[in-house]
Image 1 (cartoon, rainbow, N blue to C red):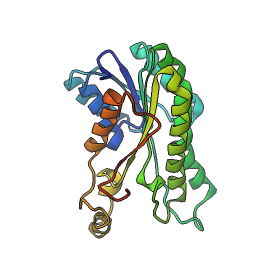
Image 2: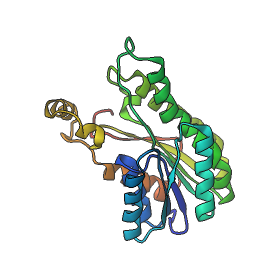
Image 3: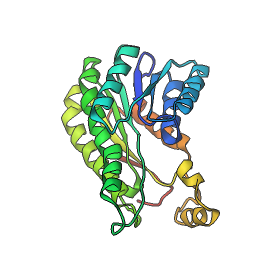
Image 4: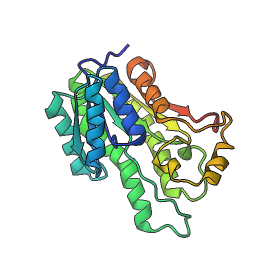
Amino acid sequence: MYELKEKVALVTGASRGIGRAVALELGRHGASVVVNYHQNEAAAQEVVQELAKLGAKAAPVQANVADPEQAKALVQAAVERFGGLDVLVNNAGISRDRTIRRMSVEEWQEVLRTNLDSAFYCVSAAVSHIIDRGGGRIVNVSSIQGQAPNAGVANYASSKAGIIGFTKVAAVELARYNITVNAVCPGFVETDLIAGLSDEIKQQLVSRVPLGRFGRPEEVASLVRYIVTEGDYITGQCLNLNGGMYM
C-alpha cells in the first residue's frame, strides 16, 4: 500500500464537486493537500478548513491551470509549501455545451484549454518533482462523455477523450520512474451541473443508468484514493464509475 502520510497531493479544481471530494478523501488518509481553485477563494478556504478538522495539512492556491505559466507556478507553490510533490490529480474542467453548428471557436478552445491542455501543463511541470520523491501517482479525471458522448458536447467529449489518450502515453513514458498514470471516467455525478437541471431532465438522465441513480462525488473520490494508495500495479488504465451506463 502507498501510504499517504508524509505525501503531498495537488488537486486541481478542488473547491467544489469531485475535486473537493478528492481533496478531502486524500487528506483523510494522511496527505498534505494543495487545494487549487480558479475563482472561488471562499469555497477553497472552506475545503481547507474541512481538511484541518480531519487533521490534514492543506493550503489553497489560486491558479488558472488553462494557462501554462499559472500551472507551472501552481506546482512550484505546492513544492515550496510542503517540500515536494507525490500525487497529482488533474480534475479542473468546464463545459460549454452547444451543437457543432452553433459552437463558437472560443467555446471550443476554452473547454479544450481548461480540460485537456491543463493536464499536460500540470503533468509536465510536476514530473521532475515527483521523480525527485522516488515516484508517485497521477490521476486524470476524464468522463463517460469521452467514451460514449451525447449530442451537443463536441468540445467536452473531445477534451475528455483526449485525457484518456494522454493518460496512456504518460503511463508508458513515466513507468520507468515509478510513476503510475491512470484516468477515472465518471458517469452522471451529483455536482452543481446536475443540481441545476430540471426534475424532468434529471429523471431522463437517471433512466439511462442501470443502477437507477446518479453517482456521488465521494464515490469518485474513493476510487481515486484506491488508485493512489493501492494501485501499485495499475497504470495506463481508464477506470469507469458510471452505474453501468457504459460497459
